[in-house]
Each structure stands twice: as structure tokens, then as C-alpha cells.
Length: 242
Image (cartoon, rainbow, N blue to C red; front, side, top):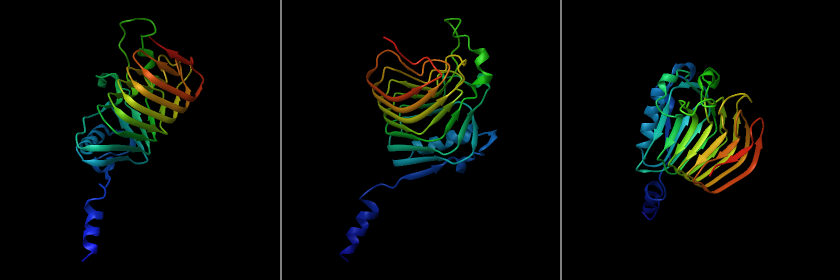
């Protein structure tokens, strides 16, 4: 009888189990040809609507997806870990992009993004990029955008051939990125590796960036930005705005 309260505490009181959500259970095909956008958004809806510590798993395979807006707030989620074990490929149909991001994480706290490849398939879109020539151009989508996130940790991701910027960090607080690989041809237009603006306490370490524009661009309104172990080339180095 004395053991009952202890067992009850271990099962119900000491911690909250990590809820695992797998995109394959929501209809993802992972064959590189079928459109898996709906499956990803349904899996995100389930993850964001969960409670406690949540894990979203994207198993090995190749996923063809259109724009993915992974937006919160996720009111009852304490932490949200996304494990990308495969490759995501962006659709090349530009008329599907109503936002300036292919994959966006917005208004989420305690997000971790681990591993995987984000292939923007930008070569098909670069001929339509007029931004180097005209000011009122239509901006192509960034591969991975973080908007208004707090306490974000990114590790081991690879971004390839973005249509525009590779990684955008906008209005975020407490962002840490480590072991990031970014690649695009030297003549790819406006494919900045990492761009940040209006963000605070941002640390990027151990990043290998080869692209057609700035490896790291620090825009306006940032504070407490630390860059260490950045390997740049091809690319224009690092640039800082006002």
C-alpha cells in the first residue's frame, strides 16, 4: 500500500510524456512526386493543438510540398520538437506562394527544429527574380522563415537552392542555430544564407554557407547577435544594415 502513492506520482505527477505525431499517419507519401502539403498541415494542426512536450516526426523519404505556414500560437504546448529525418522539396509552381516564405514557423514558443534537408528547387525560379534590376520587384519565397518566435533552437539542418533567402529570422527572441549547412550556386540571385532583422539574442555557430549573395546579412533593429565558426564561400561575406 505504501508504494501506491509513489507509483501514482510517477505515472501522473512527475512529468508529462512527449506526444509523438508522425506525418505519415496523416497521409504523407514521401515519394517525391505526390503533394504532401495537406498531410504536413494536418500534422502541424494536431501538434500545435496538443499539450505539454510535443514531438512532430518527419521520417526518411522525400516530400514534395507547397507553402507550409506552421503558425501558432500553440496555447497548451510547452515545447515543440520537429525531427526532420528526410528531405523536403518545394514546389516550383510560383502561383502557389501567397506569402514570402516556403516554410514558415511563426508565433511559436519553445520550438526545436532538428536535422533534415530543405530543397527550395530555386533554379526553376531564379530567371523570374527581377529584384537585382528593379526596386518594385515581386520577392520570391525564402526557404525557411522564423517570425515572432521565442526560445528557438535549430540544429543540423541543410538548406539548398532557395528561391530567395535561405533562412530568415524576423522579430524573434532567443534564437540559437548550430551546425547549419547552406548551399546554392555562386550566380544564384539574392540567395542570402541567413538574414535577420528586428531580433534579439541571436547566436549562430558552426555554419557552412555557400551561396550567390551575402552569407549572413544583419538587417535593422537587431541586438545581441553572436556569429561564430561561420565558413563562407562562395558568397559575399557578412553584411550589416542600419
